[in-house]
Length: 137
Image 1 (spheres, helix red, strand yellow):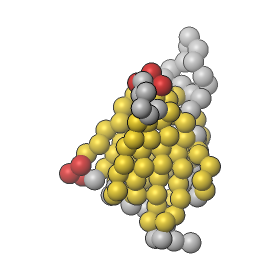
Image 2 (cartoon, one colour):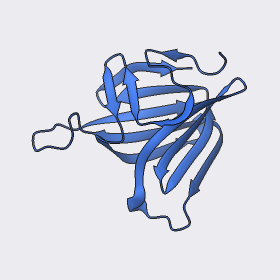
Image 3 (cartoon, helix red, strand yellow):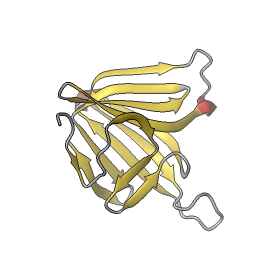
């Protein structure tokens, strides 16, 4: 198969949006147990990072939250679109679609009233206390 090679992460290629990042160290449910905090775009580095505030078992009084970052590098053909009636409160993570177009990986990130679509050469998941070895190129 052409396209991305996954290392230490469950391989997925389909048009069904994924809400979880499955790693060798566990599953991060970014829709049900997380909130998107930021989208950082670095044009000179051709990268984009999504920052999530995560709650391990849902939101409870004794839950310790942590930060997970999804970094896409070598991005090309970036398109960001908003709904005509865009409301920042409607920006909630709905899922990531990963498809193969020729030899390139195409991603579509659904954020409710906002969508990000691009090709990327690599993807890595970070946790605030260090890199989680979850990468594909």
